[in-house]
Length: 352
Image (cartoon, rainbow, N blue to C red):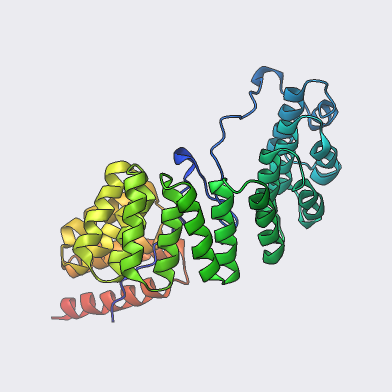
């Protein structure tokens, strides 16, 4: 009755170093160009929130950007709130300030910011329009998905060469359940930018969700050819192989992910799972141990490490692992089951 758990408990990694990054709010993951325009901050001259509110009206646009960034970092507790402070900056004469204000509204404001952000979609500047649509994705409570689809439609209508906007429109259609339109939109991005890895990765996701494994594998490989330095692509292809019980292929892809990023803990977890299934228990122990060095709170890895010890007959070590898993997640049923079963085995051995 032992239970080996395949759930990694980890979220996909950010893709910032490769030109895009994922949003952090639930399933509303979107992509954006990596920005080199972070406002330089003078650490020797930090001020209070009130002083930064005053700086929002500074004649120098860089100073206004700095104020927005500082206020976002400090929080808005000592002010009248992000919405009141940032709305005027959405109408700032300088586009970089308007874009910074849109970003800050997405990160700091609530649903009340939706209407002004929708208005910002008519901005003359393409970056401001993109940042406004991106900010709409981050608001809590979530803005209705149809509104967010209209926002990305508006961005694409004004800038149909923007691969990130097309991908985000595809992702929004995917979230709405309209996978066919999501695939068509991702194909548009591929046609416009065949050198960009992300649209291929998005199509691979969509085919994998539809259960079309061969097509998914083909597009994952296209993404790898476009960007062989992106560890999560290898990882996701490995996951596809693992779900098909093709453990040897999965191990190869997990290892490629680790060749690119030695700190990719999810790939160590996947390796451990495959090695357990392949009865390579010493390798599984090494893989899960590496995963836990990077992610010590990964209770599923503790459970599966315990199973590797149990499979090789190390029952005391196994029980310690199950206990660690339960310390981290007391209601974790798999570890409860495994600890109980292993205790029975150990007790029977002692009685003999």
